Length: 277
Image (cartoon, rainbow, N blue to C red):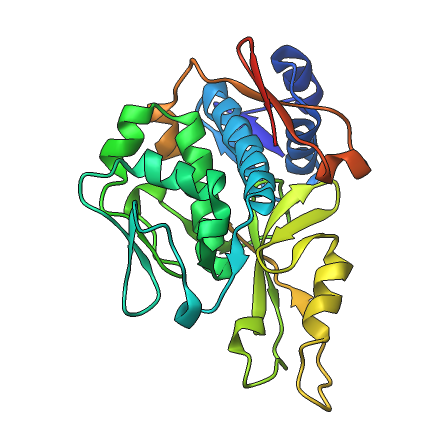
């Protein structure tokens, strides 16, 4: 159920009024049909959330195509012009480097980087937020970035909470309780829910839930009895907090229908300029 200023909202009316794309339409439909109440003080807060969620999906697709390699913390690699590799396998932003420039470099020069899956999820969130808020605010808020596991800047305001309503743009977790002890990196998989039944996990790629579970099950210890499974929880940024920094000049919109093309082509329009990932 969607509620705006205390009143139920009709998702179909919102979709028509805002001319949402197919990803945002799926978000509205899932919100409306799920058992939870999605409460907003004003419509603009929901519209911003739709926009940021759509951008998280785009950013996940772009990172998938960037050439970023999967690595354990011991094998972390980063572009030394922008980042300093720490002894524990993190990437520390170099002084005087704008955070936006360093994050963009990961997407442009992914082959210069090798990171593990949780770090990749945080990078996707940074990139998506950067596309939806004012660049000056992003560079001010996200100084001294450290890319390492689930370490993140407090201004992301990430929360992980139980839910049965998975929305495109959520970061979910596939647990693998019987993983091989010698490969702890496969104890589970963080994944962005892209909508249309697809998920992106760094090191796994883009698959449906069964594909990710099959990948994890292939990495269980001999004699394992428990299957990998998707947990009923979601990690989400602080949409309401970030909305105050929205950049109204950068309205990104997904174009195209669902189906195979969904994982093969993302096209976004920003004003009269277009890019493809």
